[in-house]
Image 1 (cartoon, rainbow, N blue to C red):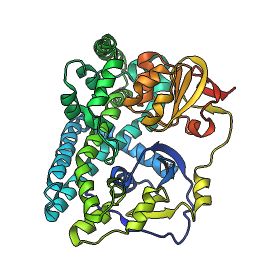
Image 2: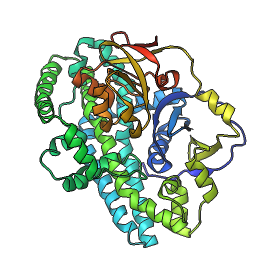
Image 3: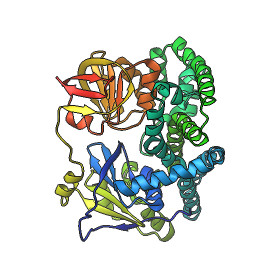
Length: 453
């Protein structure tokens, strides 16, 4: 599909009447999100809402159209699965290449050249969204069917048989200098283009915490995982079912790798947003909340965005409502009641989710929203987060158990939990809302239930 920037609508005449369902939460800005949200809306999702919640945004979609769209994407993948996989490497490399070019051109301050490079970057990012959403299609459409069919083979089906970038970094940390590590892996911390990359101090401290033997043992497990899956898939005679299993298995690795590709794109795009910030007299953080339309208008015709509104977006004073071809900016103050209704949940003391790794423990809740919260985790705690990053891994392992709002059985939290035999429940939706720091809870990861004691 050809990328087309969404038109900005700054006022809603009527409040949308659709029903919405919780999807996920992320530390976010428009620069990171607009392309992939507009892609899924273009594909058929009726509407998509991003609501600020402290330092993160909670995502909600119209559920019926989302289910239909993800089912359609799943069929597209399945119909030409091997071609789909082959194209991944090409689209991955192309996006990183276009991001690097944008980075270089942005430092030239040639507006015309920057405009051209930005357009090429946007199209490449849009093309890559097949894989951003392909993972969610596998999670929503195929995972439940496969797990129900082969409950005793789940560990084999969703095993990872090659290292993700963070694992490569952990191995390289014992043979490369901190300077080289910064250049090769510093981008791993850049989830949004306003975030700083890892520095030498980070790698120095991490090296002291890592166990070289355990890391090397992990690499040995990849060969076993590959062999176990190969032996298992040979026993599946139904061709359609076999392909679904292959898709779920592949996305156990691909789900994280595609995020790493997006991270690299954000990292290399950072000079572009720095350029916009300097030209407009605003911070990098504020500049990353410019929409694509605003960026293109400034580069093409010197039309400046509303700087006051940009600052308010940065403070979480606007929600974003995506409808076909349009982004509507919704004041969180004027429409607070409507937004609260969308994000409401039952205030129960019992929460349910999907079992990623079995076990039953009791511990103290510690809510983790950003990397800064990690230092409060102790061996007595339950690690409760909306979602997890690879950088969270050492602290997840330190805790008694892991609970997340988001994710399926191929999520980062689930993969790490199974790898290290850590009790884990994922996909609870509202655990971070229902529990708070200091609560004593029981995590029954045999039944998928968490309850306050």
